Length: 247
Figure (cartoon, rainbow, N blue to C red):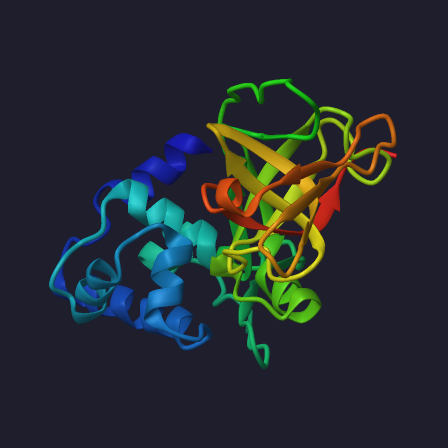
């Protein structure tokens, strides 16, 4: 099967008529997407490259053809040569996506936010360093982030908690979604912040005089009081808005 795909994608255009037919099929796919930029992003190509394909000014590589067909949810034989039936593409009011060849829904990649776990986790303990971790990625639906948190997906990040000081609410290894718009301790809540080269996740209360009360949910750990002078050295990473972990 892989050899068949490679054969189709290796030299798709043998004359001008095939090129024109190919650009027509590209345009058909694009008509079912919100924009060329979103389609290009989902396919892993630059918007300028996609526009050159549409104008017939450039030919996509084999790898780009395969990734484009996967993102669009169409058969590569149809995309390149027009073989088989024209795929059924469905428009949605806010997000448009294809119905795959097997008849199942295949949401496009641009409906999801792919967040890396930061190599440096947030320590939820006392004196326990956050370990360096290999990069991992988790996908969140962008419309879910907007609807639930009224937040631009570009302003969130994902990290993991280390330690037991925030138990039972936040456990060791839990994933934390962070609102990076919070650049200061403006209200009582759980924040991720950096203090003296250590990244921490704690509940923080700010007093009128600038003093900070740093509180652990685990009663074994005593609250800490940080003077306004030391508080000025703290860098706020963001506010915790969601936790994910085992039960």
